[in-house]
Image (cartoon, rainbow, N blue to C red; front, side, top):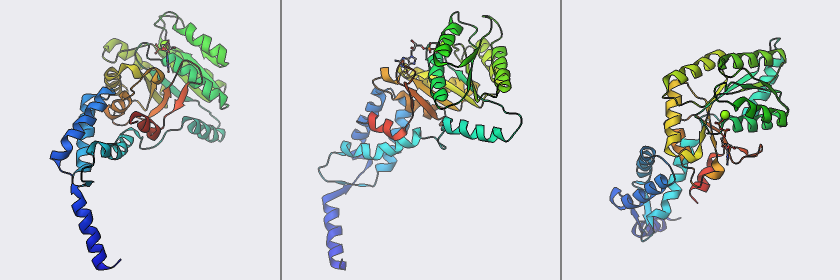
Length: 307
Ligand SMILES: Nc1nc2c(ncn2[C@@H]2O[C@H](COP(=O)(O)OP(=O)(O)O)[C@@H](O)[C@H]2O)c(=O)[nH]1
Ligand SMILES: [Mg+2]
């Protein structure tokens, strides 16, 4: 291109576009913020996202007479994907395969231990059943620890799943020490050279100090490779508060959002990740069947959220 032609193109570009300023973007950003909030993203997190979006868009050029709100998704999607993408993707099946390979070279094989936490009714027991189903299908030997010795019927609930799926389960007496059940299950898994132990626990609010002490004891005794919080996608802002509270008491390294199928909005997922400083979402629960546990894909999720 000649120097003159380049000059003309630049000039035309300049008069047909304008530079985005804080003033002309304010309304569109505010609308986007409301969209996030109405999709269950918490207020604070929605405000943070708006701030990032403003910084990103300021000084960029927009076509004259074009609708700024149409440009927002283009800039917002990468911000959202960045928030919910783990620094290092976690593939549990891959981890178990590696663990098996490494263990094969040592004489003392130990299982990978997964501890599941969460308040009542979020979907812990169901999620454990789904994960057992998935891991068994992948060829791993799984042992369940029915460490919910608190709520009557809880152990039977897990036992029914274990029998259906065909995995071994260790139970204890109701009212007995839940950490002891976890300990037994791990000892059993070591003796049988099992690949993984999945520990079910009773529902706890992180703010209840006594019950939390018991969770801390299970955590200490079982020394899990993964401490996973199960939250209910329908709980909206409560899910975010739960994740924050639990993470403060017991460091989490994975979160599973159950009941995504029942949730029309699903924005809680963004706040949950943000509020925990990026604890990775491992799976989404998408129904009551064993196969309804889906790996989490940040991009797919954001595309759906912004449709
Ligand atoms: N629709 C739907 N329901 C679920 C899902 N996960 C769990 N549930 C239901 O939520 C209820 C509570 O689940 P449960 O596993 O007992 O919760 P827990 O108290 O945390 O162990 C049960 O009726 C489950 O069938 C899911 O992903 N989708
Ligand atoms: Mg349960």
